[in-house]
Length: 102
Image 1: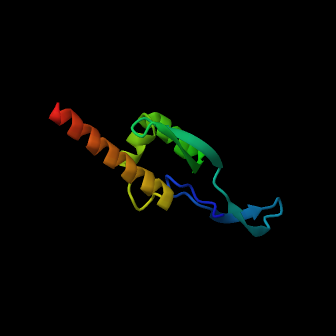
Image 2: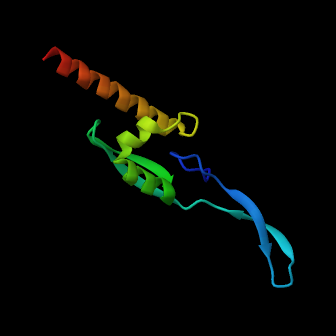
């Protein structure tokens, strides 16, 4: 399983461990990933994603998963998140069509 956030695309970074004697050895900085279930208001169900703590804060700040995905770039999203984004767009289009008929 890759260590990449499904919403923001954040992945591992590399750097150095630097000792007191200034010896440098390579290391990896891994993102803080969590398995979460986010609720979609449009779909009316939960969506399981593996996202970073930063992404979770961003979702809350933007007002939920639906609004976050509406503004997110397709290139940053994983295949699963992109599929959910398309489902939400399709459901919203159906809802607006129903309200236009009434």
